[in-house]
Image (cartoon, rainbow, N blue to C red; front, side):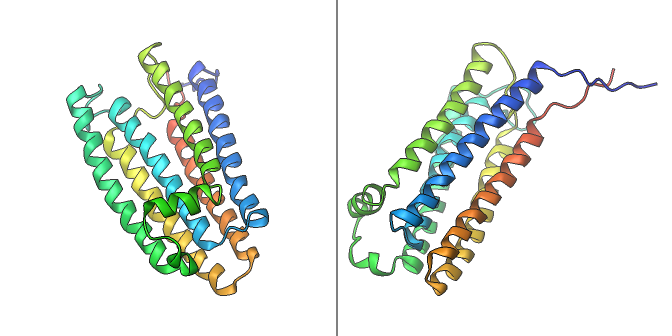
Length: 232
């Protein structure tokens, strides 16, 4: 008779701690937009800019993870330094172009009165990133994602543990692009409704929709990273 081991493992415990830490970052980073809408006067355009910049932060750490800790397809080991740099360069350019086009769509469709005030990147940083305090959730997200990356890197390269996200490059980057498409299609759809109604309530619903999508991705990532039961 085949028995399935139910004894908790160190990997399971580590996965649980990492999942709790990541979920905490997720919740805290998404509380700031609610405060921005209710107390700081954020409109649809500002909120969409935040979400686009958040994706850029996540993209940075995703590319770093894929370059340093992912396998080549069909391989059980990491890649060379040259291969890692080439891969990182390719996806930086590709994802950067993709997101630049997306930001142009946001600007053309939702900027409204901001068009007369934002003429270049310096205006955007001064008026939106700094003026509307978007830098606060962005710094928090960058530090949180960086902490997760450093934790996984130390576990792999110092303690020799296989990271929970030991996927190949295609899986890691595929999940990132899937996140961009699903997240921004849903968010921009909700943004059209929020702008048409013109009150804060639809923006709050938009934030809650974004949180729900983030949680869905988090649950999927946790399920994929969980170790399978042992079958002696």
